[in-house]
Amino acid sequence: MSDSTNGSTGPTLPSKPRRRGGLYAIIAVVAVAVVVAGALLIPRLVGGSDTAAGGDRTTVRLGTTDAAQGHWPVLQEILAEEGIDLEIVPFDSYETPNPALADGSIDLNAFQHIDYLSDHNVATGDGLSVVGPTIIVPLPIYSEQYTDVADIPEGGRIAIPQDATNQARALKVLESAGLLELNDATTPTPADITSARVEVEPVDAALTAPSLQDPSIAGAIVNNNFATDAGILDKAIFSVDPSDANSWPYINIIAARAGEEDDETYQKVWEAYHDPRVTEIVVEESGETARIVEEQPAQVREWLAEIEKQKEDAA
Image 1 (cartoon, rainbow, N blue to C red):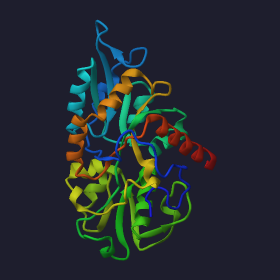
Image 2 (cartoon, rainbow, N blue to C red):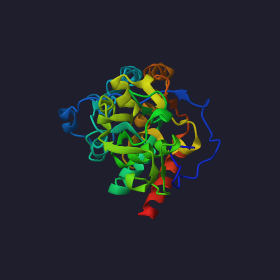
Image 3 (cartoon, rainbow, N blue to C red):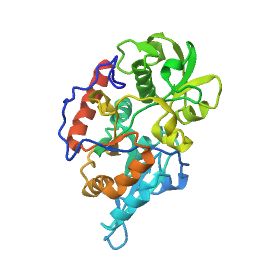
């Protein structure tokens, strides 16, 4: 049973997609950082990324919620060799990188999966687009008290992210784990639970990991960046296979503004992300919990468009 389309109408995706090389390598997305307000105030120059004095170097501002991770400095070094100065702009919540991208405060962002981006685009009309795919990460159940979901008692409280996309996915994970059942809502909320042996408690995604310290919380569904920051990756007690085709709406991507996704410099950023010098570090930091995605950008853009259409039709 999949965590991504069970109880909903997911995108029509091929069972065996074309890949550039191999299946998937391991990775995760990951740590909480503090927003650097000043970075968001830097004016954007005309025509995509900013060109330094002399015109021989280009600066690209990339916003992310995992700025503390060790793969970013390596990516910066690789791009510097190509005349691209990658500036990492940290954010401390999921709500801000897309508006910052839309208003030109940053050039790219890398923090979200395509389902999350589809929600943003449908709600705002921003039309943010996919530069290229990066990773797919599971959304596991963690617990400080139990080692198996079967041990969670009747009525046990489970903390889940409260933002719409991650909440819907978390509910599907709980359904896959046999802890509740959902109706056929496309983006389920707690109101779509038809039966359950646990109680769900939506909280800010950043608070899911800390909630595990509360004795009244039996478990929590924690995004990998927050789980990594909290040092609990080895405490996962349930995880849905991320390679399942039904999980593909949760492929993470590098995003750009509409019409800029094929910018040559931005494509170089995406390609450099897949450099083994970067992915080796990502693998180590991930705790081997997720996988590098090798699909071509055009395929992922098609999936994004299809998911957006489904949500627009359902509205």
